Length: 324
Image (cartoon, rainbow, N blue to C red):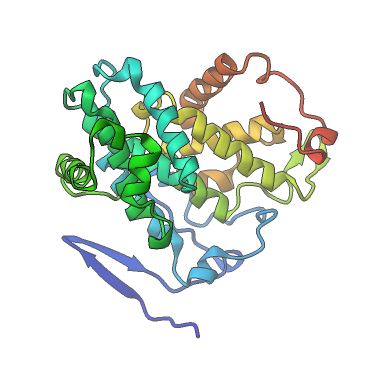
């Protein structure tokens, strides 16, 4: 049963307001963040999202834009230009750590986003402290375990004995007790703050609201049913790709997520590449994300030579043969 009561929840000194729901096609004055104050208040969304089968606001019975505002505020806890440390001593080995953590997460059947959160934990600790290399594997595994406990349902969290066996930490003399001490050390390093906002979380919000539109074109054609699914696949791909490279942490996660959405549309040759509805959704104008997009795209072409310039045919999408 719907209610028009406004629910306010205080978090410290910050008040989060969850507004009554209105269907998107009945909204006459958009709600937007500080990023897109340039969007006129009386501007009406010109096109409906394509491929959205349910209104996420109706499903959750909240105004999810409030959640986006909260993500924008909290993202600074782990990633911000002021915290960017391109000379941190662990960076030459970071790619190996990220790949290893991704493998552990996959073997534990954790959500992809949980691994992304665990890497943000690791980066926050390692960029500001000189951690002895002998502790890297223990702390990396503890980051995975804590991220799972925060992000996953309880029944999906890996048990400590299983983690010790999987990572072979038991062969290095670690027990459940010493592993819990490692988790406690991570918690202390993080100040017991575990709400991390990686770009993949923000991308999920963008996609849930609709990132393709009924009057978009695909290689001059009308969209087909599979296009939103492949926008998501490309977005997930670019999220995983940028996770590997620390230099993308010079951008706010919401900024990087907008550039990833742009790159996904470019990869599928959707036109227009950006549009007012996406500015309204993300808070970023096309001009504001171009530098970040070019960084994403150049890294993509560096890692997968030739893929950035190849043409994606309708048959390749139909046959699910799109990705590098």
